[in-house]
Image 1 (cartoon, rainbow, N blue to C red):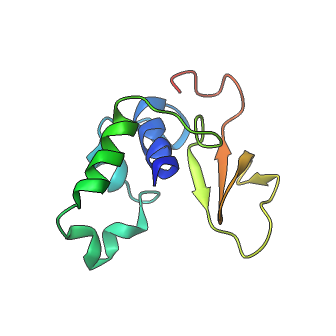
Image 2 (tube, helix red, strand yellow):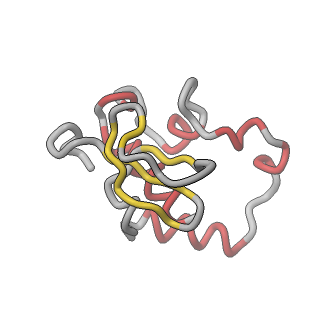
Length: 110
């Protein structure tokens, strides 16, 4: 959850590529296309648990976690992580998810 949170915060801070119009966490979550698919699930609209709120605060307060510290994208592949995904470089894997960051200099805001 912390790494996905890093991706979300990075998207708000990025002001580049697919995220030029993203100015808030809400903008990022509901971005279409490209937001988080969880908003299509009923569980997304349940009250957040205290431990989830605490994790979100950690990320919003600036905690960064490799490989998501500069990542703007992530997905869960069937097998290994590809070197690139839609032209973006793999920054690493955590558990079952692969993270992808823009090329150096492409998004100086993150």
